[in-house]
Length: 201
Image (cartoon, rainbow, N blue to C red; front, side):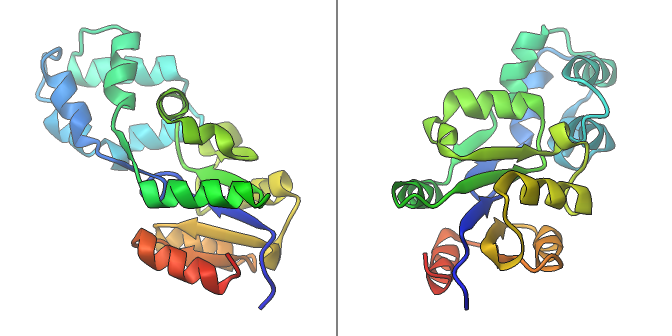
């Protein structure tokens, strides 16, 4: 087995955990509607998909949230409530730092949005340590669509077995496998790091 030259990380549930139910709890006090079902399942909503594919801006997303929930706070207040839902997965963060110390290029490849990126960038110092970042809202496409995988290959200047890709969603992993990438379906840090060792890391 040839050793990959770069490691590409999904973000959510791989490097940081997240909990959208926290959004519901924070918005409730400033909202006029029953927003529990909307916010608690926001990570599966059509509205979030539109936001994370860049079809609507942050201002438009916020306007829709206000319309749905009657939220009375400002955009800045909402940004904190919406963005501060992440917690670090320390074992994976430490491993990325080790890869960096060994001059292995590392990349972020994420279905995400401007508010999440803004919060993670400011809250987690490790996040500045990657070679490049491929975000769905900037590319205009979400995993597992081919377009965003093509963007990864362009950003890394690698393809096929030169890439090791780690993601918690099997449908996204299949997208990488279909392009000949080495892949690890992330379930736990221990399992991922054990499998990464098989790939020479």
